[in-house]
Image (cartoon, rainbow, N blue to C red; front, top):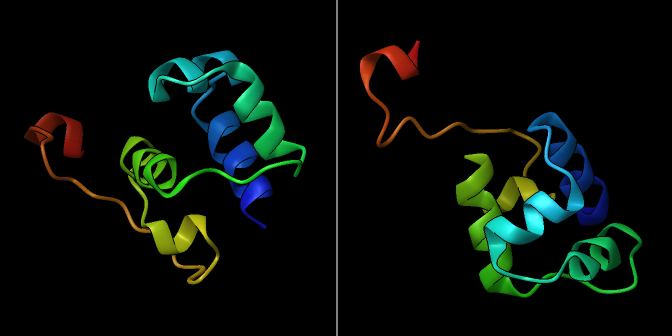
Length: 80
């Protein structure tokens, strides 16, 4: 479920709910609601999280279980 993927990715990046909310320009309570399954993120937030976590929206939405990593915008050292 999307709520599980959000939480797992957030924790993998060592973001608190407040950290993720700040990066998305939303209230922490929105992230809390997503993770507690009381609401779902709007499409613009799904896209923003996909960019932030460098994954596809399909992975976040569990359409595809293959996690992809975009190297776009990284220099050679960062790619390593």
